[in-house]
Amino acid sequence: MSAEPVLRVRNLHAYIGTPRGVVRAVQDVSLDVDRAQALGVVGESGSGKSMMARAIMGRLPARAECSGEVLFKGRDLLSMPRKQRAEIWGKQVAMVFQDPGRSLNPVVRVERQLTEGMRRLLGVGRSEARGRAVGLLREVGVPDPERRLRNYPHELSGGMRQRVMIAIALACEPELLIADEPTTALDVTIQRQILDLLRRVQRDRGMSLVLISHDLAVVAGRTDRVAVMYAGRLAEAGSTRLVFDTPRHRYTHALLEATPTLEHERNTPLRLIPGSLPDPVNPPEGCRFTARCAHADDECRDPGPSMAAVAADHHVACVRPVTGPEGVDLNGR
Image (cartoon, rainbow, N blue to C red; front, side):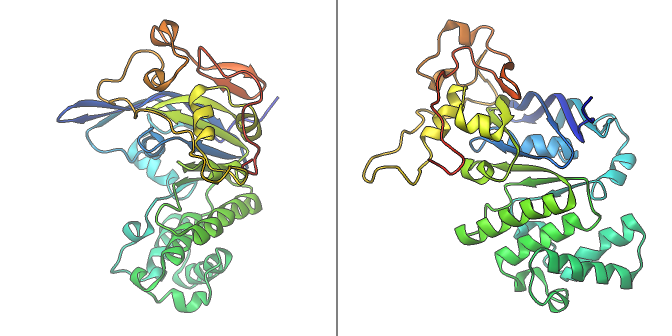
């Protein structure tokens, strides 16, 4: 019998009221994250990836309504009183946000931002917290960590700020780390360093990781499983190798077709996905990808597909799935 997942999400919905109407940001999402496992969540901007992460962390706007189950080690975070959730956030579940320049307090030195969580949640003294902070900065690759503790965030480069954010997230040794597009504001070289750092730390600590990105290449070689989101819903989920080698949902296949590879011929345009994401206030019935899919028919629209197994550890929500080996390998070919 397999061990219980660290994170189990069931029928998660997140609706946000706006002047235009209710935005259906996340609809009926269910997924698992096992112990010491890395899950990649991918999709276009606006597909609901970040909103799903914020719903899990309980960081949705005050006007948002959230329902379903978010079970962390068997305890439902959504039904838990806020005071009890506060004891889990940071200590057992931590998050790395997109832009470290906006997440770090610009008028507080790195040392205080790195040690205050340890002192509050772990009850350690100032001297021990400072020693741990130096070790954490060294672990995430910050040079001369003793001196960096005295810096303000604006005195650090973007890559160093993100390393500090990762160190803060790791400070209380969480069992689950959610990284929400952690390389958005960084250049390509630094992006790879940060992603490799996250994967190394996750493996070294035996920690579970949810890595959110709109870039398929980011999750291809750094995750064990992948979930593809489109317009607030899950389109496909399974082991990373299966989803990339044999994509079954038409949206996943289209994303891979639109991704440049080393073997792509020069001067040959990429296959773009026509159209745009549907209106989240008035989404279409059935499969949300219908308007952009050349294979859609009435069966896709009413009532639409639900997630179904197509192989061991491979589920897809598509009435007209792709057949045959039409994917790319994990090296982008």
